[in-house]
Image (cartoon, rainbow over all chains, first blue to last red):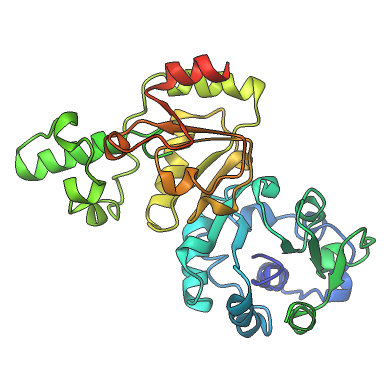
Length: 165
Length: 165
């Protein structure tokens, strides 16, 4: 969800700009871990609006809705680390992805318990242990300068559309 | 979680007693679907205290803590159908099972996305599609008169302790 459907990096950039008056560019945060660019991240994500206000990744709504006609799509989000995010994420999905049923939403901690064929994620810690056949690494600043490993890097939802549809 | 760690049937009985002044016994609700015994169930579970106040199943805390020394234990709860339950369930686990990390908590809709070796559950809809090797059907009034199928029925946590420890 974060860094794939919800633009959490943009959320961090905007929050930091609000606090410091200085807006970081994508190039400035590229290649560094999220907590190096945004040391106050762990405080921000406990806010009761942070996740609710995140922007939707371009083209993700249309492509995910199309994926649902051909695949059984689950939204799996590592959310239990930040309990206030749970209801915000539920509301955010209802607002932006109303065609996703509650049956297909999963809020977890570790994603090692998830079984599926394809995983789209921006974190190696989720993709590396995944036992399904296809892993798509969603390009984000924090992973931009790491090697792709056995995963296929994708830069936006149009690329996912081409691969999966 | 519900019907295995949290005594949701007792919660329903108490809620109905509060509203009607008449307390149903386990024998009276046995063998009937939950919504037949408790037609107002779907209203109660949207309450912002219902899940928070549920009693802990006898012996479950001690046995789950012991299981954690020998197994990788995940608490998987079908919770996204009732969004107000999410934060209550998080708090309930923190209060009664503080040794369970957020990493090992998973709130989902359908449990078909869950991969594990052993599942303990009170619902056939969760146990039947499970691909792991061991399924334990936790005896509850709503499943008490159905055949066990390919699952092994257990009546309490002492029995689970004997089987798994």
